[in-house]
Image 1 (cartoon, one colour):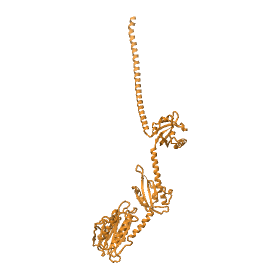
Image 2 (tube, one colour):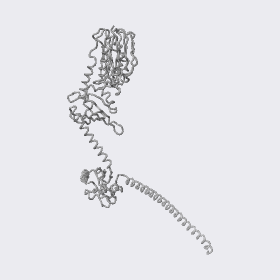
Image 3 (cartoon, helix red, strand yellow):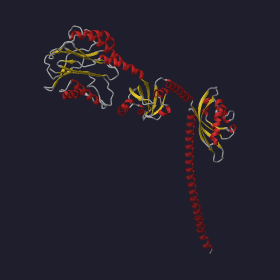
Image 4 (tube, helix red, strand yellow):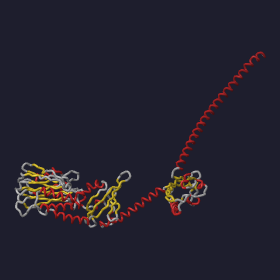
Length: 556
């Protein structure tokens, strides 16, 4: 029995050891698992710490960059306590770049100085009243512009943009925002303002009228001179369109071409405007288009000069000039003659004249057509000088070559240094009405129309304009086959170079067609038809050149 027990004891001990070992293994596994969990948690924590450290480093860098930007910018960031009592509005934060004004941030944070202490004395009361007004109205975002005094005693303009915020945890209210140094901008604005005031005074005291219009040609401003000019008060003109002020005969032109005209660089044009009693006032308008920085049209401006007295003087000069042209058409055997001159302005530079002996039956007949360079007073004076010399010389004995040559010599001496000159067509029809002689001094050739064969022939020939070379030798051109029913046209280029609203020229072809259709009729009818067609063609435009035509029809 005892032997049997002793044999079983080692087996029992082995089982106990195995069970113990199993428990230890389980415990080891549990500890291994726990260790792994702890290790995993530690890894997670390390990663979290690394992420937080990285974020903090990035935040620190961002903060340093922000502080660097702020410190090097004109924008000062601040935060101060909000209070009805200005003495309690202590600064709790101010950026270091307050040093731009010579102060330190610590001086404000340690209450050594308060911001209201550096406000310029003349602006202090105003800024306090503005803040009280914002508070009473419940406005929590506002902007103030005022001056401060720097540490060195300089006065600078700033812009203060303030917002009222509340700390949700403490309930404390703060004024926070930015202060911007706008001194240079303010100085520039003041200069612009002073400049605007200067030019406004100039405009207001100017003797000529001034109009300021929006992009739709509505008048938005004007000066006293314009109001006096038209006899209408400023308040009654504001809001009107420029077209409302222009005489009816110019309405078509401005409706069709006015916009393109005003888009030109500094356009200058004449028209009539209406006074309070609908009286027409002749004016000269200097206009310009106003553009913004992007080039978009924001308005138009115009200086308006009253031309009434000037026009009276020009009208008188025009009457004198017209009196120098033939007042009635010649009555000649074998010839039917008509001529007309229409100046594009009050006075012009075109000229025509007739020379013959009315007391001699069958006298040779001469027609002269000239064109002075340019328009206006200087051209009219040159035309009068040329006419006087030509009439004097033509009344004396001499060939047409001698007459034109001497006139050229005389004119060259007068105008050579001015750059002006005169083209001339000098045509003489012999007493038998069969032979013609002509000199073409730089002028457009005359035309000879033969209805029998429906042909136009240009009366050409070499020749330099008068007033350029006083030694020039002119050549006489001749033909001896003139016959009854033929039509001679002598004119200036203002006829065929006239333009309509589309920019199309009247042209020589259209002129020839009018002559061809009306050749059977009198010279006066032919002339009237030409001017009728020309006037209708250019309707709605302002002629740019004088128009002169002479029509000669052979009747024997």
